[in-house]
Amino acid sequence: MSQQQNLSDLEAKLSALSAEEGLALIADLFPGKVVFSTSLGQEDQVITQLIASQNLPIQIFSLDTGRLFPETLELLSRTESKYKTRIKVYYPETSSVEKLVDEIGINGFYDSVENRKSCCFVRKVEPLKRALAGNQVWITGLRAEQSANRSDMKHIEWDEGNQIIKYNPLLNWTFDQMIGYINEHRIPYNPLHDQGFVSIGCAPCTRAILPGEDARAGRWWWEDSKKECGLHSR
Image 1 (cartoon, helix red, strand yellow):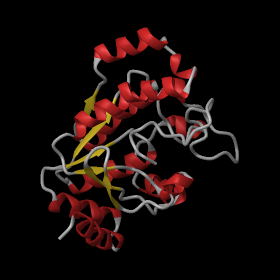
Image 2 (cartoon, helix red, strand yellow):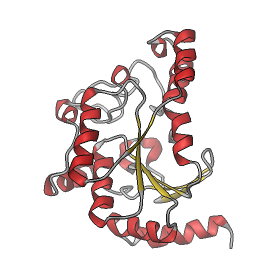
Image 3 (cartoon, rainbow, N blue to C red):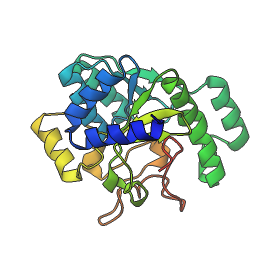
């Protein structure tokens, strides 16, 4: 049976399951080969709770780019404490960061899309590849309604760039559904969300959004792009 058929069959199964059930199934089907990348956003906090509440054998990791908000790092500590788990943190290679800053300047990512993508590659994409190496499934907190270019995603997809299966357990969750779950289960979240920051990344590259703006409008607001950093193709 082809990989495409296998993924189609798995998609059919996952579509009929809750996020909680889907995570348990994935952990069972790919023992010891499932990882979850958290940026400590609200979606990711929900998934962390779902993993921890079932004590699933899924490694949770995060990328510290060196430019994160203090509130994000403080939330990482609070999350580890609440769920009695260790979130593995990956950092960019020191030599690569030094070379990047030497070439474009400390905030050179504002000057061009090319510079910004180079910064994202060094601080996020390369560390992610190290984190995913040797695993079979990468769990993400992507939701279809986050942006137009994510509206046609599936629960399970093949990520060609990273050569890994990607599972999106919250794909069809609405924003209100997510917030309701966070409140019901008293899940810790970044206080910046209450200040208009919907999608939170690096501090120099994130701003609060204005009423009526798209949820991703606060990311790399100075440029006209698809608002992606290279971690996800969409």
